[in-house]
Length: 400
Image (cartoon, rainbow, N blue to C red; front, side):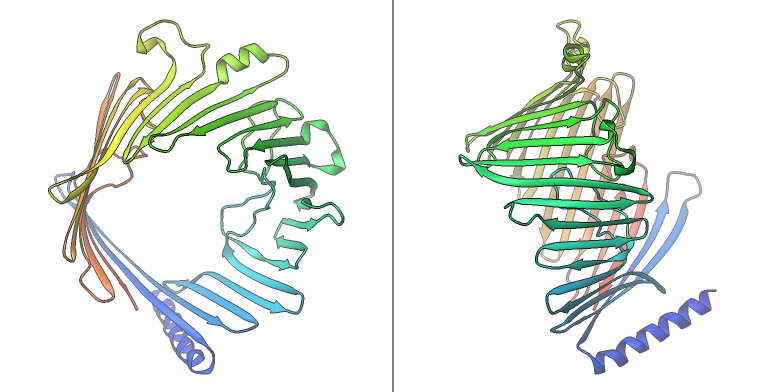
């Protein structure tokens, strides 16, 4: 199997060089090599990974081709053909399904196969079990129509943008599953904002408390979703906001339980953030009786030619991986010594029942023409549950 892949890779490289001499083809290559040792056990465990990428691309007056090959496999490809009055785009394992409406009726982040057909007034998308058309509505300036199909269900949306008395007004009406017409599948949006978006309101009305949009990133937590914001000042700059969701039947209870209010203040490299989520769970004056809240502050700084950042937060939940009340301390430092770059960051979580320490350090050498070399210690993902483990990695990246 490995020999077959090597032979295929050799054929692809030879074919690329042949095409380069015949067409306006450019090709970029990259190789990533990683050697990792886990020293947390008595017997250190080692692992090796390699990755080869080839990215040929061809450009012309009427076409645009780009391909990504990972090891001996085709990872993704895109071909754009420009014709008189329209353009056709073909995709292989690329994320391209996304409607342009404010709510975003369809959006698929994973790579897919399919094609776009674009004209000056319309866009047609075909990708397996999802297809849709977007078009401007004639004689109605600023209004657009989306008609889509996902599996055996048909959806439609009308959306638009208008300037009204200097305000930015966005609106949209969505109806999912037209064959089984039901108000539960309907969603309406109205957004009004100042011309520079320094203040505004956004209101989303769903047909029912359990309405959901099948392929949309828009989360609908209740029948009514409301948000408002107000920004002012420059030094310091303030951003205040309120978000809530509620049903008509349980308006007061839902507002008390679901309302989130906050304020962010930025002054140069320093910041302060205050946020409270829900008020129904406030039972007393002590922080342990405040329910969900967060108080964060931090600053960037320079010290002995090091650039750094310090941040502190206190609240409940303390962190993504610690649900109790607690504190989080964060510190990062970095400095360049010519072609050598040193970077380290540390995080400590002190929860009500547990403590977690995170550390990541990297020494990177960049003095090579088409390569860099790095030595890493620890895991750099501090958002996940990755407390420090003595894992050392040696990484080489090369490109040409």
